[in-house]
Image (cartoon, rainbow, N blue to C red):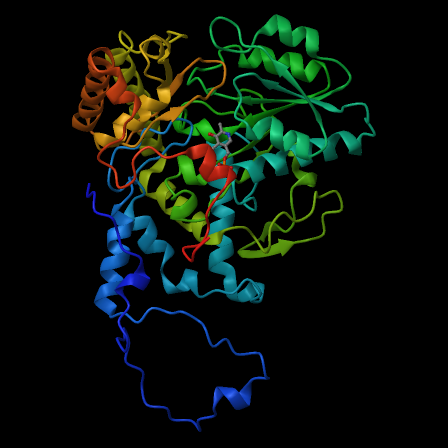
Length: 485
Ligand SMILES: *Cc1c(COP(=O)(O)O)cnc(C)c1O
């Protein structure tokens, strides 16, 4: 990676230079001064005067100053940063998909509705659930939708005492946050020494005040909740519902289904499991899936099919309502649809098999130097601890930073909270053995450095465009403009 300091685009500006050639005006010219009211024109608008090539090089250089899934191995646990096949992007750019308008009459968008309806059916099949809504646009919004469905269900039965939602202490932060946003109290269930839900503790917490339990399976330690069926029975016996955080579906595609584990409601992260880009790489999608008895509460509109005709049903009196404008992020759905069709059932099983194999391969090679507190076969990810390294003055954060020097994205650190100096590693199925071996070598190297020169590791990175930054300062006192203070 280059260490060059990139100039601001304004520094490249030269009086009179232009990036475009405008055609000759073929309409009557009016002067802006006459067209706009006094005071409506800025005279001091500082725009750079640059050539097209200057602009292209400038932004290309900027784009190279980061580590992305297209440039490097990206083992960010819990996030499933897998390769986004280019064919998905091609398909989602077909004019038939990009040119439809959400206000077009239903008869003219039958293709788009067919795709959405079929994607719902695929997701329902993969999850072992009965009905799906594609509307939520992030995992967290799917959780919000799911927990609103849980609340609507209890309200429909006039069961108003259910004010508390249970979450394991290993849960993703969005779980308690969304449940709280819906108005529930949160109670935390401790994990046992195997890293899974402590059944006895759960027993003591269940009661007529419990609305539901939010569980991730496999959980955020990358461990399969082997007691899930028992947990489910206990939760249902207490009159509560079981919510599945499906962000970790990459581990179980085609192998196990939340619906069969008797979950009532769940969300997917299409931008994790189904290979659509994340965050800055594109908008997300967090569809939810429910069992039949929760169907009336799904967001509107619901896509219905009569014979060969698809239509949007808004007449759902018990619905939690709308969560997003129109129908969610349609082009993300197109990508997920393409991915599912490309792989088929057999391909998806192989995704999980390889994701789990890759994670276990790295874990088995590293666990002697980076101990794994819950030492069992893992699923798609595992959590190691750097607490021995910390005694030598090298924290999990420092290891993460040093990996950047070696050309790898950092793993997730300090999550889940129940592991001290956590390093959460998720290789995904899309990486070759050579890449995994190179990462393992880098981790071994950093371990050696932490013994020989801990101070050096503690101040990494050195090869990145920006070295160690004050992350707290950046969050608390952000500088959001390049113009002075
Ligand atoms: C990513 C993730 C979420 C939240 O999904 P977003 O799309 O980022 O909102 C929830 N739970 C788990 C376990 C996750 O990994």
